[in-house]
Image (cartoon, rainbow, N blue to C red; front, side, top):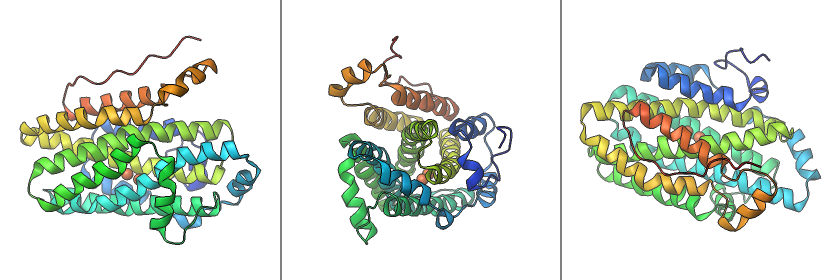
Length: 314
Ligand SMILES: [Fe+2]
Ligand SMILES: [Fe+2]
């Protein structure tokens, strides 16, 4: 597949061959010319894929050849995504009913279906490739939580459900909704997930790992591009309607962004070893910070953001 091929209607097999940066570019293009909510809905109609149709047998064969240490590494990277997809599926409901405009509500129903599909995609991969399946999905998700660091747990489990509960209790209080979209669409999807997804897909592509997973996960990234553009557009409009909302977005970024960046940074004790291997430990948090900066600019704010170390010279 040539790089010029439009991603618009690419199949899973084609997405498997698509570098993740091409998919992330869709977000940047969307930020330059913000599409309407209806256009985002139509994109969703054109970009359907099926979690059911993926054949994971080649991925399974690779997993069976891996040693214990490599298996641990794969589990740490992927568990946060599996759990994260379940968390966003569980918490989006209150956002839908609280949205002030009908076009916003219509788009968010498509996102809810996407997040459910992403969760099912991961459930299949964990069961059929990694061999982790506790029968009830809830029990499988509890099992894999041990592979998430405390910052990931704070953002994906505690904070997402806390804000969703406040939106559910006071759906007409737009302050909760604005904070919620900042956390969900900008911090979780547009900052953390984007950086984590890029790191995983690039590493897998370079090492020719888990080919079927790559196809599905790239389709997930294409879905996320619509969600992130929705979130940025929504916040920009909310601030244009009432400048008070700017303070709420700012407070939410101040509160959640440092934790999100820390979640992507290796623990202090591992950093000397990583540097000794001539690997940059701050690639993902730096990428995340750049992603966040782009979104904040389009939302229409200028904020002071946390600092991530520059790339070391080896
Ligand atoms: Fe998702
Ligand atoms: Fe999403």
